[in-house]
Length: 470
Image (tube, rainbow, N blue to C red):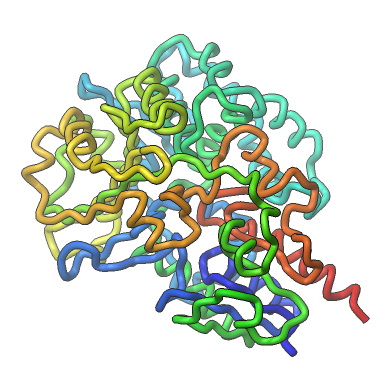
């Protein structure tokens, strides 16, 4: 009998398997797709030689992950590549605010009236970032805080809505960039703890940047799988699990799946019926015949570029997708241009480019024209650079990854109490009604992103139980 079986070979499932194997437990992973990866894959979606990331592409939480940093993933081919600027946010006048590794450079891009405010906001936490990140991403009750005072201070600043923080900034440049940071988790700007979301992304950039993985996000998953195999674990692909009886006998079962899928497979009935799925993404992967013709020079040097003319426009787009049930006319967009630093992703002289906007969960329309109209506002002539495009609306995203219910790439609405307490209102979110069944997906704390910490935290709950058994 195995000690543990993991269902799903996304970053969290693989991390959970590695953490258990490192502690001497026998582990096997079962994945329905033909390759490992989940939300961290790389495929030729458009033309031969153009390697795209179907979901995640830039990894501020990955390079800052306490779980990943404790693993020798570089030995297994993972190499982080950094653009000159982690992120830029262009404006329609041809200028841009930036999120730089340097706090001073970032603050200066906001203008003199907000530079001091921004520095006072982030510098106290940046000085203790590694400990804060570990404490913040280990909640709840998976580890005692190493610095409870700093964590409490972060909570006091971060728990209010980001709209409260915006009042500290006097000019629109800072408000717009910070609104974009909050919007990465598709949460309305006025939601609970949205200030914390923006701060985590900003601090991540200042601490270690927003890199891409050389060769694509698949290299993160491949490194985790290779490390697991060296530890004695194994991965089985093309193995769809429809019920627990499909799996070999084990002392524990760990699911890197949506709560919906777990309830169906394990026979939990309506146990997770209160779990809410959030807005969806509409994503386009582009093969380009050259760089994106951004008007703002800073955007040409950035790995990630946020698109939204001002904070009001971003807020309107988020409300449309999350509350009004319609696609925004001017979507807020996150774009990533890996070819700025990684020449392996496209033929010489060509580039890959990635953009998505937010739409209602399960939306069936086509956002392509709205996305490209937005891009043309900040990069005139963009359409002329397009060699090919691969579009993926909510249905296509859900078909590629069963965890993205209705196209929700966050695997659950990141709003209200569910932002922190997911998938149930519980201090032990990785447990389930069955004592031998656990959940480790992005539907558990600390939530979405390629960081493996949900898997790391769940693995702690598993090995504590296994060690209690006679």
